[in-house]
Length: 482
Image 1: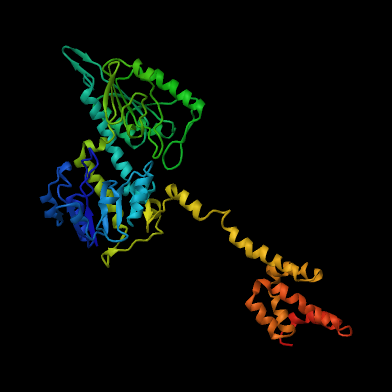
Image 2: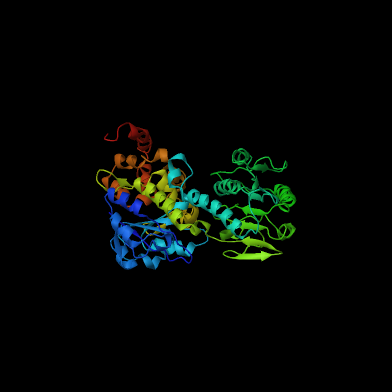
């Protein structure tokens, strides 16, 4: 079992998918580890540290990937960069499939089994594998640090001989993983913190960290599935916007965190709201990668509007890469640990495991994740297309035999041929008389109805014996040999 760790090629990405700590643990599982040269440089991990942990250093991506059974990455690599891996090799990382259908399809064509860690279910068993939570936690922390760096005043209250310095007011919009860490960090730095969330249950969490929870009375609760909030109605959106507009003008620092995977980020802060804030205020938009929660956010950039600084970094966790890589690498290790047979020390993937089923994006040359494979599935399993080949032999062909059968024989025969309870009927023909009829029925099962019809006329022509065949019909099911 060979595991390859790639150097990230995505612009601005400084994290790495493995650390010396996880390399040593992979080797203990029976794996051979190859790390591409300089893969850990951005995270302050030298090649020598990987060597000391037991890894080999690949001079190029090609030499690193050759014969790999598992490829670890932070960002989705290009399909062309995966040449040399074993057939069916696992590609594990944050593959960001939403809106990247062509790239996902290209990955599928390489034959790798791509596993997108963003889809890890939010269940107790998978908490240690949840890359979204580990990285969002760091992003929430870093958001406050970035804000403090450009905020031109002190954060905590200070009582000095020269007078008292009032504390900064920080407002966090969204009390998920990132939001809660932002609240905790701002509170530790001495700010007066308030927060809002559309989920009523978040109130207790905010208050437990020392923040003040605010929520409009018009919005009772908007909790959704998977730990995310549901989409608000127009009335709820209006009520929430009114609440925010009245509160945000008094804040020094605002952190927005509303982000739902696969969807554009909801707009929570309008241009007018930004302009209502005092010059020198700071907004950090953690949803910039999906367009941003702030109307004026420019993804990847820091701008100033009307004296208010808006930070739109798209990879805040990557601003503290050493810590981010440590947590991310542990997430991957915890997942891979479930895929390995500890006794045999080799891969033993249970494709029916709930964690695997939830995260597999491509397999055996096809996109298999339900969220992305729908168009292919509809084409292959079109409910209107399936009955088509069945209808032709079932209804059309027996109907054609009516022309050769008499009216008295043709009317009941199609029902006998298609009635599932009457399918044994062909045995009557075989039991009644010549073997030739049975042979004809076997050779032409769909025209069996037509073959029986003329046979019924012969006994009818013998006037004295016409009644005997009628008596034999019920006798056939009782004893076919007679």
